[in-house]
Each structure stands twice: as C-alpha cells, then as structure tokens.
Length: 241
Image 1 (cartoon, one colour):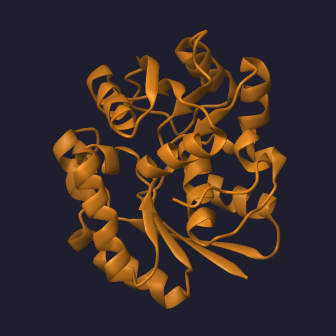
Image 2: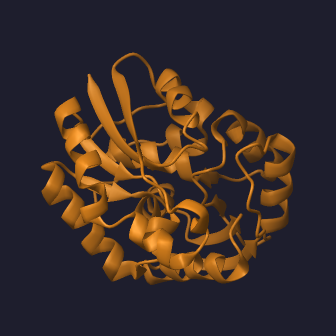
C-alpha cells in the first residue's frame, strides 16, 4: 500500500481525491488533511502566501506523518507560485524536513508533469484574475516552459463548475501552438471531466488536483496507468527529477 499525503486548504474541490483514489486501485491510499484557509481574503495574494507557510501547516504535516504517508504535496497552486520559484522551493524543502518524507506542491507538480509529457509550449486557463494568472505563467517560464497564451477568468465561485464551464475555460485558453492546456485551480472539480476535455481539445489537459496526485506518486516512486485520469496517467516511466 502506498499512502499519498495531501494538504488541501479549506473545503472546495477535495472530492476529486477520493475519485482519483478509486481510479488508481486498491493499493493506493490518498490521505487528505484540510488545512486552514485565508478566510474572507482568500483571493488576495498576501493571504494566499501566508496560507502555505510551513509554520502554519506544521500540525497538519504531523497528522499526515502519523497517518503513515509516503510522500506529501501542498495542494494549493497559488499558495506555491505566489512565493516565486525560489520561495516555492524553500517552502517544499521546509515541509519535507518537517514531515520526514519527500514533499512538493501543485505548482511544481505542473512543471514536472509537463516535463514528463514532453510538452514545452503551454496554454494557461486560470480562474484567477489576469495578474495572478500572469504570475503562474511566469513561474512556468522560470522552469523553462514556453507559455504561448494566458487566460484569467477572474471567477470567484468555481466549486460548482461542471463540464460546460470547464470546456468554456479550456477552449478559451487553448492556442494553436500549445501542446497542452494547464488549469491551475485546486478548487475546481475536474477529474470526472478529463477525458471529455482532452477529447474536445485533442491535446493533454493538466488540472490541479490531477497533477497533485501524480506528483505524490512520483515522489513515492510509483508508476501507474489510469487512462480515465487523462493522458498524464498513460505515460511511463515517470521522470525522476
């Protein structure tokens, strides 16, 4: 049994994780701990940065350690990239030391997943405001990606989005030069719609909760094939970074 530790802020799109666990099979367990959110200011950059500080996550990290997790991922895309590449690296290194296990974040999960798939020209379809979407694009560029288009929907309420809204988002974000479309919002429930999104665009779609679990598997050195989780889960072997 491989146990994947997920630190998930608040309550919004976490129903994706039991669905992913079911699709991965009986020998993978997804242990999810809901962490404290930024409250009423959840969309502000400063509160989002503070939400992912190791000191604030210390008790939650301890809970996953006691649960026997093999790897840990901080499941907040914005709570990673808003620190910048260097700050996000410090964040996950500190979490790894606290947890006594490999650690990463959704922001780096997108980088590693795109690298694993061999896609460098990326389109971003974010629910964030334009300025925050641009910061995510800059994070990707700092890791060597070429971001060919950036769309910021500026949508505050996304937990209830279904396939129609997601299709509108990725279709609007797509670009003829893009090899994949990235959707960086852990509040979105995307897992049930991944096959339809990829079929519609004819290219990989990487979403936040999907790449978060893939990253945890990468850290735990597991290689699993689960086509219902999108093209990312049909490629082997996983690149070790």
